[in-house]
Length: 183
Image (cartoon, rainbow, N blue to C red):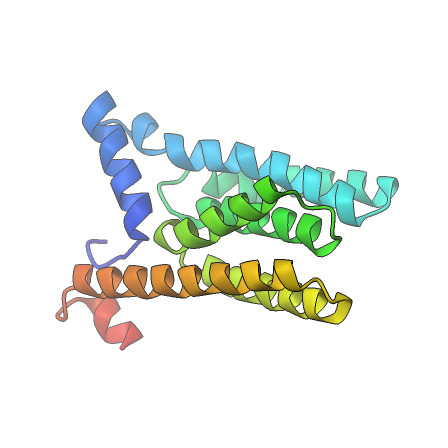
């Protein structure tokens, strides 16, 4: 159990919660619960944007009743935080991709992209996919100002992801099972 690794930001947030509110399984599981509830809201908003009404209702119902979603919202693991971060990225990317994003949406996408690797390892794949799709869409439609902004966000994200990776490697002792497994 001591050989496991979680994103540095997730660990700091968990440590802060326990430091402020005391050692308790309820305190330790509060962040995943909040992320699970936020995921439900984010998924509902994303489903409304990309699906017809009836399909969105079914998708949200299936999402809300997912045993994995429920379980990991009550477990001290970063998986549901991965989900919340990824849904936030996708929601902003859909908005920006349709050309209806505001400067605040762009700023939010940039901040989320820069912060995401510190709270969610798999979010890097989501950011890369959404970022490439947005770059393609802006290039195709001649939205050069947005393209420059996306390339700047991409550079910030790469620097942040590299910092997160280096920090995570530092946290993982070379003699641990997880280090040997991932090496």
